[in-house]
Amino acid sequence: MLRRLTMNAPRKPPNYLAGYSPDLIAQIQPLITAGTLGQHIRRRYPEVHAVRTDRALYDYVGELKSRYLRSAEPLAKVAYEPRLQLVHQALGTHTTVARVQGGKLKAKREIRVASLFKDAPAEFLRMIVVHELAHLKEREHAKPFYALCCHMEPAYHQLEFDTRLWLTALALEGDGGDAASPRAAADDTSPRDKG
Ligand SMILES: [Zn+2]
Image 1 (cartoon, helix red, strand yellow):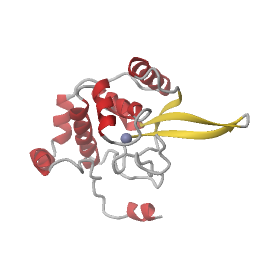
Image 2 (cartoon, rainbow, N blue to C red; image 1 turned 30 degrees about the horizontal axis):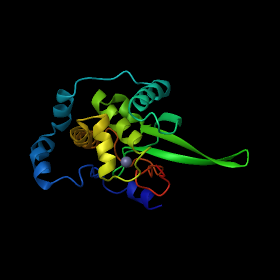
Image 3 (cartoon, rainbow, N blue to C red; image 1 turned 60 degrees about the vertical axis):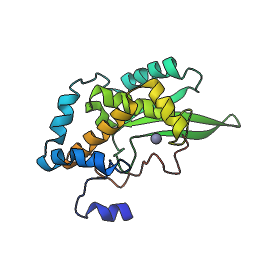
């Protein structure tokens, strides 16, 4: 209910940069003020990707998984999620859906990526997929988690920061990235997240 009410409040871009140092944020503030942050990011990351469908995303995730996380349990589902808005710190979701099958409780691992990543620079899709894959092994956003991310993508930290800049730019441009739906509760750190 609170979310529904806040929908009508003056729109304020979500703070995708929380947790980064004020010095770092001060460096990009002029771009935000000038309204050129999006342009700046798109110029630095001109490469688009061809991962446009759930099938293509499944293959893309599967390839990375077989290269780096062969021993992790198989993924029951990989999909783009149109309703997944990027609120708070959420960049995607990784859930374990528990189902009773033949009298046994079976956990099914799923990865969902917000649909707006269809139009993200190639490097940002890679970053979000690496992030969600790392959760197959490490649940918490702690040192071992980030070590695994960097193992899969050495530029992980730079790419996460730049992805957050891109999301900030999209929110400022009014093109998604805001909590536009009451279903926008998919938060990486929410209790339903068992990844
Ligand atoms: Zn996470």
